[in-house]
Length: 189
Image (cartoon, rainbow, N blue to C red; front, side, top):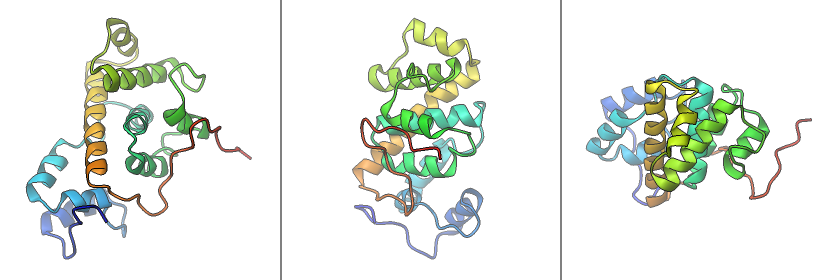
């Protein structure tokens, strides 16, 4: 349980409806959600600002941005959820999943458009901006709506990392764990 506890059943109608639309059938709400939902205002702001719905980026690009952001912000909680729930759908290889934590844009795991995403995330988190060259690399592959989505995803998941860290939200059962630094990808056999 988080440092500040979690919302308990019976859930308020609005939160229960949101979870029915968000979570797989029969799945309990994530601890992140029940921690935030203790405050109706905080939940409203989080849900309103979240980017849970499909956006202009393809799923694969979206997940690369989310995994890199959560890895760079040391948010193993959210990284693990996305590895389990979305990495297979995004067709990310075991090497690419490890690279989101221990690799870099030019480590040989990424196509040019994906390397541009990794570079953008790294620059936004480190420098809080993109250089002209970094923006040109991103713009070579992504239109204005997609570029805005990249920046908003980085900002949103950086915020998620702050929430998880501040309230020490424990990992979900069965969630993927960060690979050790210097780890090689899992054996494909």
